[in-house]
Image (cartoon, rainbow, N blue to C red):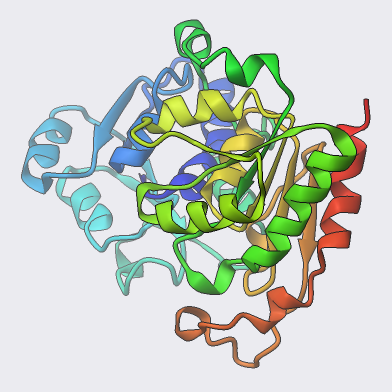
Length: 315
């Protein structure tokens, strides 16, 4: 199977747990991205991780493994299916219509129906005779990774705010995030941690300037170090982006903001302590990546998010 980004990878973890429970003697390997390698590290439901880098090297590694079944959870590239065929994998399961025009290489195509991404992956487990274990995302941090978190984040009560996202059309206005952060600091005596990637450094600085007393997450942390920090947070407030799913996998409270994407397909799923604030896309059809002014997100006011946050912060 092939996974890429944070959400795509973590949505596979319930299926991996279900595979392990259904087939305890099976050898379960995952081919994934560098991001996926970090997220699935120490996952007890996986026997081996392969990084999706060198096709020829993967072919040589797989050829002698005698894999009998491949589940294509996320075909972000065209190569996973030809690789499975070339490696002699007899049963190849995937969702019809999502394989870059290579559906004919699937030996067991499943219907592409409207369902959450977690359910879509679990459907493949059921298609090969497995049973669903649970729907919970999982990310396994070691004791050492947890111990190495700065004492600062353990001593105080922190709310993480993630104002960025890869796509501009998924970003709630900074002014709204700022009002939420200032109100939460004042009314609930919590500390505000602004998180983001190196590419979002300017965005984080802009928001920090609007929330006096807030702190910007230090740069240079690995994905797993970031996850260990996130596990210490009392709450995460975020756009529709990867850290939402990381927090859910760590069983932290989350408020996730959606508009152009459908949370019923890619949002928090069958999980407690997760709140979704959503609006339908304003423009039809939605401009997606061409959108620079997401009017749909502007329909969500700070008061709505603050009201969702309050129950998690009342002492």
